[in-house]
Length: 559
Image (cartoon, rainbow, N blue to C red; front, top):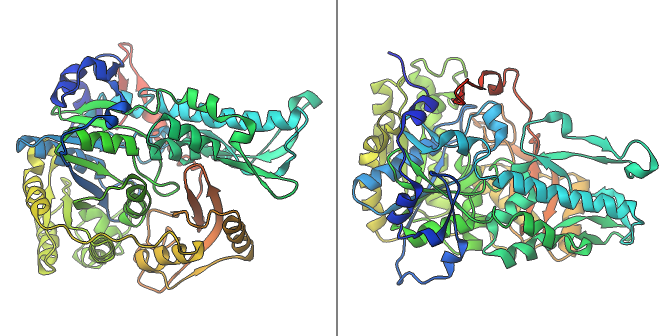
């Protein structure tokens, strides 16, 4: 039996005019800016209006540690939104924007899959409304102003060897990780080492996703540390008078984007930092806008709960003063077997032993969500057509023994209808007395204490290793007065450890801290663990090889 591709399903869909979608949320044409028939920007000033004291239920979707292809977290999120809509609930789904890196690389896009997608899928996975391009332009404007300042006499005495601000591009391109620029004649700039990050790892992306309004945006952009002078003093973007022009480039990007699911459920998509190298959540503006307009808001955090959910809760929830009413933890049979010892090539084959071993990965995530953060959790078993009934039953039965609520979700094949059961269970769970909610660390703790708590409490590490150079950087950040910021740990998404090959984590392990970076504008400290890169590379056979456009202008080959 053949299955239609995601793009075939999306192209056969008949979306509603985006103005009709806006009406479902009580929005008129003055509240939106049209980008064609099926996309619109929403006025972020809506957040300043009263809503009669209405409180939206917030649902966070996360997952176990994934396989390289991902576990359908976005598909499940969209399916649950459509499921809640089928129950008659006023619901809005808030998602991240896809990066071109995965689209043309290996993992794919972030518009969902099968019959649980947001549309127009091709636009969303490509240029969309231009937000990422604007973020890249603002990032690179600052880079250009740094180098121009040095070329024009360097009044601020910036040390070229201590510039921390990197350029960015929204593409997987390992060739740009470390470069030398300024070559050529005297007028071509000063020769120095430089490099690129992928746009989703840019501090500008993080800032856009954490601000409340345009004034907050300008302030945070101005607080970006671009490097240090000869006296070891930090130099800020505001010292270069760059924040105003950067904000101008972001004047439209700050507005969240309104689209719809295949079943015409409203969807807001805005911002897209990766969770393995950044904080992994869509924008505060998007989430708060959704919570203002709907009774149920369902959002997601990237990769496994050790990354995206931890950062959503410890960083985003603090800054936005929000908390989830329930957490949906997505698991798949293939990922459970993958983390139970089955090879990537054999995870579609029945292997009850590997499945049993892999349940430990799921249990650890659940324990973190329930036991460490104190939140209600429900497990969504995202069903694939290759799953065996005995495998699905085994997982459900084992979860039931531990009094963990679960549901088999078939959104990929059935859309909202495939998520009716989990949607009903979510409605019941959020009626319960709220659980306690605790952060993993206190902001007043030292940077080392905060890193250690995440590593030991969430990852399960026995300890953390800090090279001398990293210790000195941490001390410097604390001396500068930034010791009270949250930490954003960048590590592999495939394991609780910092080793992508250590899938089972059944032996004691340590987290190796390679570097720390102050992101004063974003308001957190990036901690690089293991071999994680802020500029990914393309795989041996990139998805780009199969993507094309036909004579009618229709895109083919995207998923």
